Length: 325
Image (cartoon, rainbow, N blue to C red; front, side, top):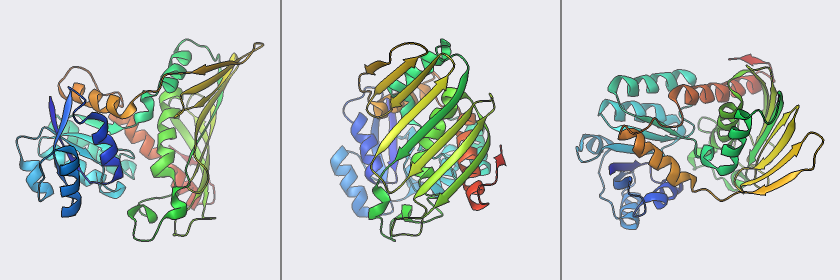
């Protein structure tokens, strides 16, 4: 069983822990660290773990095989490199980092140390995303012409200035790093790399100084076009559509619903089983650490996702100017 430690204790660390602790035979969280002693004590009591008083002490503990990082986005690169240097396998939440250069450096540190690097793009594990992947492999869409995605939440409407996400340094381009990166990863996993980006981002409704309304046009290397919308101030949506010469498909990712519209035929409605995506990705990480299989998100894919995110921010800052990757 993989012995992991959780670092950066907030609501998402709890979500990850709850998906595996005492449930999974592949991974157990054995310790935790946060700069806040109260958070350490709360997490340890809730999930029956030890605590460490410093990041350095945790990394020096030979009874820990791996770390699960849910720290602020801007700290990911340094934390990944430090963990790799200590010989710990690394699971890091998306976004991997905030710049392509830091992503390449962090991935390089893991490769040099010979440890597994896993970036938590959990929505690849939804049954609806996997169905779309299979349909593409079977040429069910024919020539793929276009794809559209939107992942939005109202959360930033309640942000207060002291929250770390309520800053432009941690939330560049608004919801891109927190929400849009999910759909960037899915779009690239399904349709291949993005070659060019044109984006816009504005603040319209939130009480803190970050953008809340962001959209982008994509040109895929394959020749297909794409669109991404990601908003921090509207009711929740998590949808992805693919348009091709043989069929169109419209997926509600989190609800596991799929509508397929074949050319000349009736629309087929499917309700797929709900996947436990967090447990699945952490067990896949444990399997990779044990040498049984590669982790599903290749480091190069995670780096490309960061590059797309960075290009969106640069394009928005430049008034929508196209940015090549």
